[in-house]
Image 1: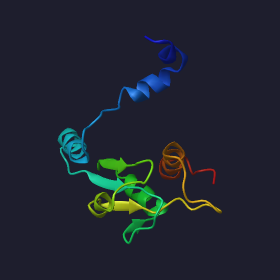
Image 2: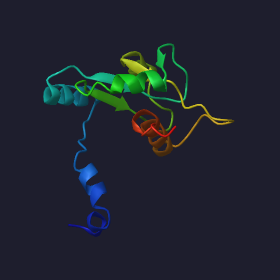
Image 3: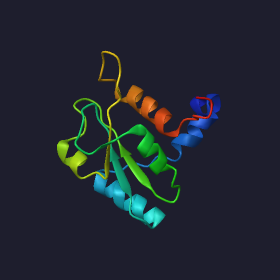
Image 4: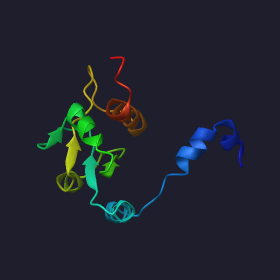
Length: 122
């Protein structure tokens, strides 16, 4: 066990769940195989898309724990239009005061908090 695993065992546990794939299709097939169910794909990005879904709507959709989802993020120029057009959902962009583009790490943190974070105290 490395020093990082000793320092932060929950990170090691979380990262043990990570799997890599060469393509989105490969990831989709593997998740479908594991869940024995079709995966619903969620694309993200900083630009509006005609089929955007808002955070509250997607949050409710994610409550169905029997449904597997594949959420796609990309840094730099973002996901291609083709990927967005072939996704089941395109998450609405994060709205901010005077900014629209975040690092992918920051965007993932905000998105996961909005979708999966505890909202009971709000």
